[in-house]
Image (cartoon, rainbow, N blue to C red):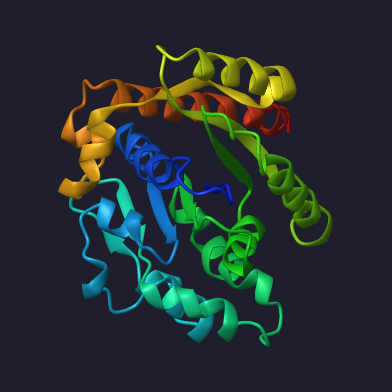
Length: 268
């Protein structure tokens, strides 16, 4: 069964969509079957892998509100053979209002994604910059969450609120939700402030922080305008190498995490 990982932080501009696109692409480049789920009404993950959101007929909105089968809206990307997309659309803005009276409204995305887990090694969800109903849906559907944190002054602002939301979801909606890791993004080695933020985050969260740190990188900023992940825009750029390292770190972590289960199966 594939692992469902949400990329979430209610702060905007911390690198959620950049991380979702490029982590999914890096996992696909490593030949893991990967589904990128665009759960943000801005639909930047959709355009970031080569699709025009205006041309999308059915999106995750129709899945959650109208009950369309998730299998029917999945698109095969042209950028990488192992990467598929569940697209978004601006209509997703209205989903929270339309879902307010639906039974089990927090579990609509879970109902859509969990049946797909056997088809993929990884499902990566790009969340919107809020803690609204769509993000709650994503965290309820996910097995784990990656929290991107920008290496700037307000990095820790709101992080406590997000971690508190995760605890509430763990206790009420999704007991198996865990923190995959805190990812430091937009790191500038020349700035003393960046280094201070790295030290502070590692001091507070220790083992939860990924070893991989994502640098500020021009190629990372350019690649969305071409509708391709950075690994196809410039595979040798620092941004591309960093996201490949993150993908490997996640793969290794999950192999280690599943090792005891594998050992028990072998013994049985």
